[in-house]
Length: 121
Image (cartoon, rainbow, N blue to C red):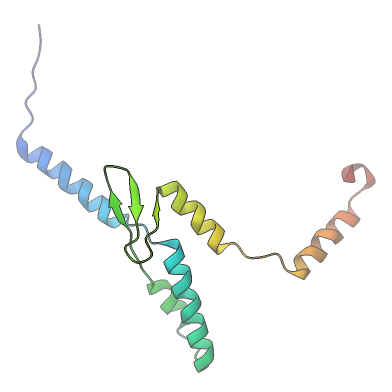
């Protein structure tokens, strides 16, 4: 005995619309373009001497990437970046990573020096 359950067409439509809405809400910003814009905003605001609204301006920067459902890649129409969600995350991490400063190196050396001899080996 086989049971057939018929789903109304409007349920499929709603599911599709909800999926599209969730896709629009989860737009990925291009990490390279956002980093470039942030740097330009910071330079512009420091040159003008206005430091109060910098954080608000940095939060407003949005450069969404278009999602290609066939290849499951994101495409930036501004710079041409073509990457998966994982690659976009890796690029964002690399761009936002700060270089180790002299103080960081000093702190690392001090931590190493203060360890016991057994921990150093």
